[in-house]
Image (cartoon, rainbow, N blue to C red; front, side, top):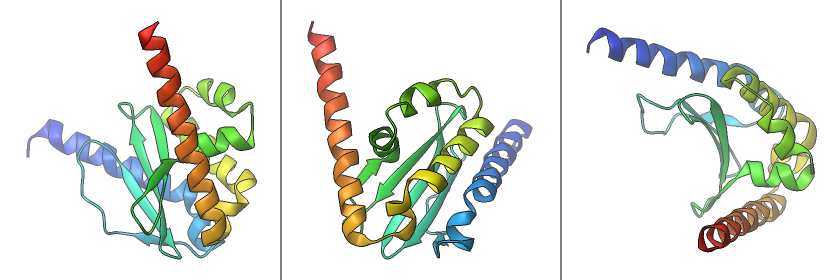
Length: 152
């Protein structure tokens, strides 16, 4: 491994630790367990939390400027939680665009999850299915809107 690879690996691990620090309330307050069954990646930092056979994947994206939260069902269906957060708070999209760094994005999304997304925190499978449906519908709308814009 060269020096550049070592620096990248250190950055990935530092980001993982920041995610663990900011989302640690999932384990300490809500009974989630960290799921270490993930593929190592030297580019993106990922942490998985699991409860009741559902998982939350928290991953850095966009060259370490943003954080992606996905809900993963026991049937391996997934949905991006930003769609659910937008459903809960109509100002979410505007507010998240004003976040300028990965550290701030992690803190904002951690706080939003903690204060607004009780259905995810308690991990009731029926409620999580509803959350997943909202995320999938939100993504389908986004795809449709973007395809329409591309065809205009």
